Length: 286
Image 1 (tube, rainbow, N blue to C red):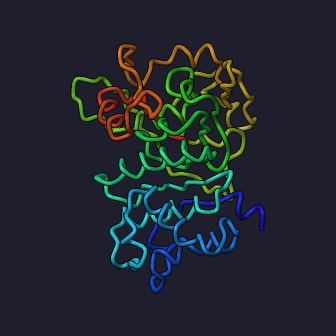
Image 2: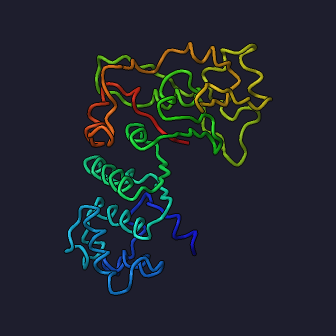
C-alpha cells in the first residue's frame, strides 16, 4: 500500500482513467481517503484545494466526466495523481491525446505543481518540443534499450547517438531560413520481442558506414558504452571523436536563453521561442 501511495501516474488518455458515473470530487476523494492523507472531515476541503491547484474552481466538484473537455479531464487526472502526495509521479505521454491549443497549459500546470510539491517526475514522451523543459536527465531508448543517457543539455548537440540524431532531425521546423539536416531511416522497426543481434539499431542506422567494412561489427557485437563526460554516455561502436565531428542537426544560438520555469518563462512561451531553434528541444523517447 505504501508503494502505491509513493508512486502515482498521469496517464496518456484521461478518458480511459475516469469512472463516467462518478462526479469529479468523488474521484479525487478516493486516494485521499484510501491513504488517509487528511482527516475525514477535511477531505472535501482538500479536494477543492487540489481543484484550485489545477486551475479549476470548486464548481467542478459535482461535475461528471462527460461534462469536461479533454484538457479539464487531464487536469483532474493530475489532481488525482498528486492527491496522495507521492514521492514519484510517472507521466506517460500526458499531453499526446490533447489538442495543441491546451497542451502548453497542461504542461505549465505539471511544472508548477511539481515545483510546489517537490515531487520527482519521470516524463515519457515523443514530443521533442516539451521534454527539455521538464528534464534534468534524459534517457533515449530504442527497442526497449537505452542507447544514450545524460544531462538534458548534453543530449541536444554532438556527440549524439545516431538514433538520437534521427529523432532530432524528425522535428518539423516552420522557419524556412533554418537549415535542418534530414535523416531518413530505412526499413521497418524490428520486433522488440526478437531484436536484431549486435546493436539493435544496426538495421536502420545511417551512420554505420562510418565504421570499417560498412559497420559489420554492429551486426555481431553489442556496442560499448562510450563516456562523453559529465554523466553523458552513448551506446555505440562509433568512436566519440567521429560522433563529435558529425554536423549538428540544427544551428544552435547562444544568444537566446532556453525558456524554463526557473527563469520566469512558461512552457507555452518556451515552445514559441524555441521554434526557430529546435536544437534546443528534444525527447526522452523510445
